Image (cartoon, rainbow, N blue to C red; front, side):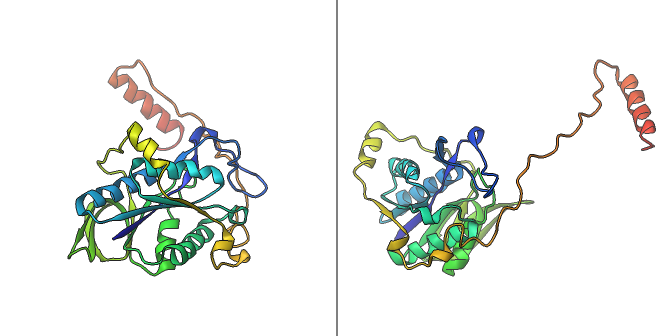
Length: 265
């Protein structure tokens, strides 16, 4: 059985900068981390491997050369091997171009697989679109926002519990399938010193646009179907009226007076 985990390197929240001309994130010179939700996906892949034995895990990411550090984090946690899609032609890709590029690489480089795991969203863009677009491009079923999963029917199906507005629901899908992972009750594992050293010995492959059959106009900024027109900070709202150090009855009178002034009552 083969599990692919698609992960993303994201900038530290406090360091995010935007290129006002292109509307894309400026990643050069910014400290980056493995997206936390991607770590949850990695953790789920390792749990499946521990429970079912003969499972190969492969982490895949698209990004600049510095994204190697996030894939190394996956290897340190226990993933078997990693693939980095790195090419300047990939730069500026929106969610569609990203999903299309990753799907093309999966079909040509990896071929057969049984399960794809992704984080429910990235903390930089927060779109939660790449996972669903990836499953649609590959033509496989998807279950989003899952907290628990298990293989069933002799590893031919997967049963997943996901979060919804009214609580939780459990769904089942045939493999191959894509699952996006929420935090849930899990605690991300901390690699040991030995695991960190062993990660340096694991297979790591870097591929460019020339390694896959893909047109230049289909990738990166050229292949993006959406363009950012304008970026601006939200307008600051005026602070509301706060009633402090008052008895309940006195505070209630002040609230009524305020509402009458505003013609609400």
